[in-house]
Length: 69
Image: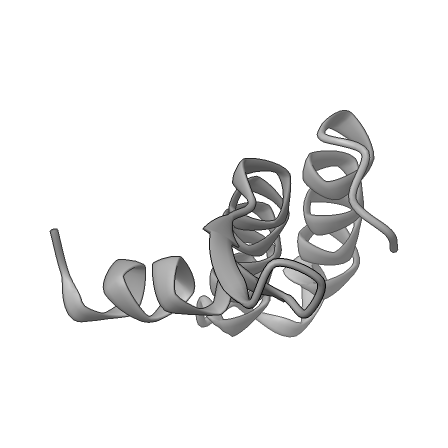
């Protein structure tokens, strides 16, 4: 597992004040992974003529997984 995935795992723990404990939120982790994929898509070097396509691909991936645009 690479360092970035470890960071996303850590961000996926939610503190429950009522029980004074933390739990792993699978849905949050999935959303973070999809958002990270969308970020990688946009950071991929492309020519000016491909920029619109990159935005559409990013939005399609996020929409497919139900992550906010």
